[in-house]
Image 1 (tube, rainbow, N blue to C red):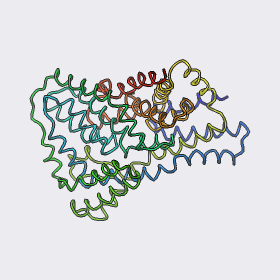
Image 2: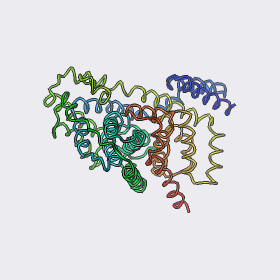
Image 3: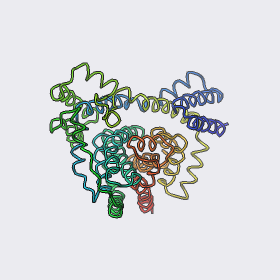
Length: 431
């Protein structure tokens, strides 16, 4: 019965993916399925509700942080923070090393903003536009955009995936970031070398580069003042301030920038914080719209519903057959290798980075006693593997918003160099 229940859940997930139905409906149906399993196993309704509540409590603290991220990213857009960063970075682009600079600039923007989608839609879209003007392959540039976007999505202090991983593993975010940076040095350097070689062997057509600053100047005042909210996040992260406090301080700075520098009204600021920012200039809408509390509802719903499962799984032993199989596999290969395999399966089925992180954590948590080490396992597997699967939201939305073809994903070097280097590194540590 255990296996049948899990097979039905996988079938529901795959059915929603094939029919292009929101995964939230699949998760809700999954909860009904698991609840029915729990009651059939002889547990009372009161026990079922208690299990569900215990699971929800594990992620309750992160929900407020999600709301802060939505507000922060909207006001960074409205205040011209992202526009100023993008324009400053775009001015550094030189045709001879364009592919490498695309990767580095997307890394920078994604670390500052903590969002792969936002990076792809801003700096990514700009780089693809410039690539077309220069006669470069959009497939090559798309790979650099995808890799750079998820570099920061993995290790930014304002990234939802980094916060979620820290929460479910009960670890410190800043310690995780420190570990992530250490483990990413070699794959990052290798990625830079590969993108440098790609740039050397690619021939541009010498087209005219678009005037990015002129486009953004139609909507924003740009200057050092607009960047202050981003500097607040960076400085507070360096002193390891509380994440929520850092975000609140950056939001406060953004409000002041919006009011006194961009001359927005209080009503506009509140609307953007709730609904997300939409520029008046139509040319910018595909590049910089987004953010807001409502933009976080989807990921919040996924996290909440998924968390309900964990209490059921732990009390009923529903995952026992799978975890036993994983345990047997772990005796043959390293714990990280097993985590990587599981994350590949959960990512392929769930088609969603958030759900893949949570399912992989629930299935593989017993493999590693060191919580910080296991958090690194998740960051070096589930977080970066899902964007490499072209049918997932993480891959398709990122490339589409950047204007790059889906065929770009094999050139996202960092995303598979990281797990490959980790396989070697963790195996040596085990020996």
